[in-house]
Image (cartoon, rainbow, N blue to C red):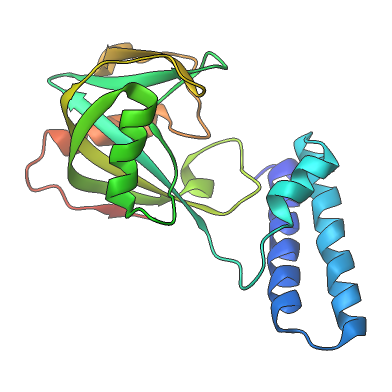
Length: 207
């Protein structure tokens, strides 16, 4: 773990402790102290991540209640020896996916994201893995994230550029793009999805 990752981890822990304390705390003086701790965690996160302080506060300090991880779902749409990736407006590539909406199950959300980002209707066949993003993706996110990778079969559809993605392309496993959005999916995660597609008795990986 490098110096920046350690600072971000400390900031996440301070934020989590402060958020939980603010939820349960009744004493106004303690509430004021925990609110300041939360602000300090945001200041550390901004200083070490390069994000603007107000953006960090919006992302990092608006939730209430006991803090729990966020869920990110990814659709591994594999056809033969190729996988369908979407190109984001940054120019980087990733499996279709995103935050799990509160009215969707993880599998439903994977299908929804495939439709919204790739214009592809899919059948969700199998849960490949549930991963702690901090252990598999980089750079670290301000949130604690659990990533659900689903194996999907393409049914039909046609891509149209949208607010999130500008292109789609089928990539053979040995010709994956170099400019991957690694905070969303990595080459190792894609190779894991190919292995799952080739194994009818695949057992879900976790952690």
